[in-house]
Length: 380
Image 1: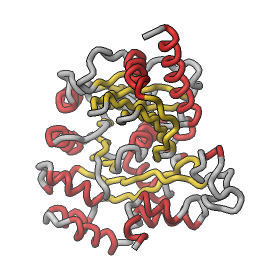
Image 2 (image 1 turned 60 degrees about the horizontal axis):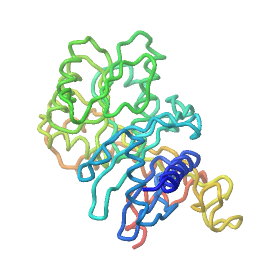
Image 3 (image 1 turned 180 degrees about the vertical axis):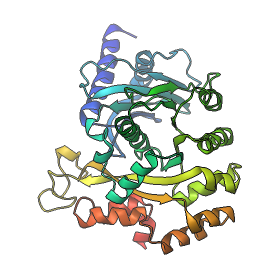
């Protein structure tokens, strides 16, 4: 590789990362194809193609990313993960960059994830949760038991947990708070944060067992992924701790059933789980365009990258385990039965919460349908 080619690749990678940070992208995808390398930015949850590089540059671009992330450039047939420390020129709001590389039939695929110092999202009151849900979460913060946050990847669960931890620190100073995360995404002053390595000997179960002997009052586990971890978490919640964690589940009822599927006894679920918060992020109509497809800018504008949307808002639903719902879990009722019980007691589901934003003109019906998985029904 000649000196000019090295300089070109360095400049290209820097420009792509700088552009992503400037646009506020959460991720940059470097996807190999049979013809070259396609670059995509994830903006407000949606991927958009921003560049297509020729095949001759593909390997060199990935190699440059691996150098920045401290990865082994001569290993091209195994997944690798690293951290990019260079942030000069990317703006003060970028706090971290994580790199993941994965081999494919067309070459190595890479994704860089950006983390930002989003000061407006550090306060629990500023997340945009409905008042009734916000009040319920604050009551949970003063109690004990397990609070589960559910939703797909990228739905803001980590942001909500971090804001809740900051609320507890402020409201109840002096409490011993410890987190187990993979990786630590947001550093919180006053909280003991422990990073779990996916390939190390200190796994989530090992760390959690040991921490229970460290006299913590509040524990946060980044994600419940296996039966062993959830078993120890249930034990901690039953012994007087406030424990918070996330789980991939589409609905609160689905989260409760998944605990049962992971081998937790029904009585343990009803005795330990305090509540489930299910959430999504929904795109907000661009303030500069007025509305997607509107008369002032039918195809969007530069501010929203011609999508008609700019920024995202939180929609959520909150379920507290009590009364008839507890009995149904003890009886191992199915998801349909649990949903019927929630409907009878006037539960405001996530779609109903989102309709509030549609009526206020902050988002569209089509966007709400998409986020809630109702696109196919809407098309019929």
